[in-house]
Image (cartoon, rainbow, N blue to C red):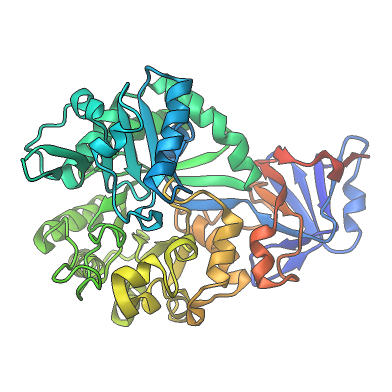
Length: 518
């Protein structure tokens, strides 16, 4: 039997009982043979493409379990404030963009207030000092807060009596929006973006995603603070198969009938049960260290969540709920316990997205209920550890966020995602962050971290029979790295690069120096 491609001289991680093979043979869109030694030579013909892995790790294609596709694509065209540390730095970036497009709206993303020397959002008057000739919109890194200039207040027309419009002592809007006002502003802006613009933006980032080794993403779209049109757009894009990447849609809506009508098998994603630590809206059972009397917010009552979760069980829908604080995790688990008691169904692989502060009792119950935690290790890289935003908000509880080691030891299944575009998509940084925790008791192994973005991630979307493994009969979704990640120092993991990405047998990213025709 002759084949199209052979990857040889690799440390090919099959993800089956830690088995490693030397080579993989690909025909069409499938892996048809694996082996050790030089057995691959019998499958070579004059047209076979040989890819020399040069002793490096070969992995199943990376699966990002929590990815805002439309937001990531559109944000790639915006002003990035990731590195801004002051209002002046924000202003310089706005002026640069304004001079380039003087009459256009200016959208700014990823503002992390914890990095600013002012330790707060700029108000409209402060933004006006830098630019007042067109609307400015600044959105926080976790999407939970916005600011606009005076032009933006007039342009975007958010009613002043909307909950979350912050006002000064004269009861005039400051230009800073939270809660419902922020959600309405974001939704209005996102709804104004055409499908044509989204399509071009998505196509423009495909090369970057292929370079990171991504072959599948869980696209969490629509709902509160986003746009339901985004979910409908992604669903149509999936059906048209116009990009190399596989996308599994998680529609963030409470409208179960709509999900059924669209023929979807899952619901949720960023279906907010609470908020974020950064904004002090994550629902916690103790007091925020830097905000006396504040315990965050719950967006559901227990009764309302019970009813919704029960209906998902009865309709056979996989449900993904956004939960960060321990109070949010608690009411979600209680709702699942009730639904299991009513239906006896433990087969739907329901998920808790983020799940950052579970108690030991939560972890035990989640395991018994068959719940999956869809986690974001890079949160800890950016915000975890001593002296971090987590410590600033949570005090000593920062020591207990994202307890991956304990979760895995208790048999809980974890899949991982980036939460792009809140955090940039980088699967190798995800692995690095899970292995090199600043709170070392939560460290996991390189293999366990790789499982989270391959085999576990495939299981979490019911695709473990065709993805997530390097096995005969599986889709040829494959990543070739430039190092053996099991034979380098843990601190060097974030420097590892992808040299080839293969999706369904086709090379979508690669270094031609590694290939040779026979």
